[in-house]
Amino acid sequence: DTGVSQNPRHKITKRGQNVTFRCDPISEHNRLYWYRQTLGQGPEFLTYFQNEAQLEKSRLLSDRFSAERPKGSFSTLEIQRTEQGDSAMYLCASSPSGQETQYFGPGTRLLVL
Amino acid sequence: AQSVTQLGSHVSVSEGALVLLRCNYSSSVPPYLFWYVQYPNQGLQLLLKYTSAATLVKGINGFEAEFKKSETSFHLTKPSAHMSDAAEYFCAVSGVGDYKLSFGAGTTVTVRA
Image: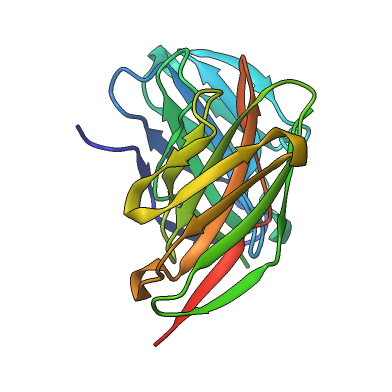
């Protein structure tokens, strides 16, 4: 049973560019979550999916951010027109439906220059 | 809404000494409570969780935590610190039926030889 995987692990981009991250959850986990973690802080919730449906979005998820989970399997998080304030670790987690424990991936560290 | 407060952003202990990390929660409903550990440049690993069963919860790597409703606390302890315990520790809370996690700011543990 492989864990949650995320790609890329690191991304350096210039301000104004678009970036896309991918998360592959644990097989058969219905729920998938995205969090953002800035230096010295705990992760903050961004959004989550139940299968392919995006059920909740945080106010942190501005209109430059979009997340998808086609077919209820992997998920992508896209940031358009990146800003330096977007620099952070983006964490993905998954859980079976109805269970409270979330299993986290290794994260994608984004640096916007 | 649920939230947690971790008291102390840094804790330094000697190898073999007691590790005590403090977490207080705020929740309008009976919460689920978690402790996660994060090693540098890695994702979060679940140490233990409280889900309204036994108030004393044992986790991996010799850690345990006690849920005290009267004190709204969920402190993490380990009787004897090991060098490998050096990491950042996060307390988190979620509500029943609302599985998104709210994290504390984290406590960095250093272990002195």
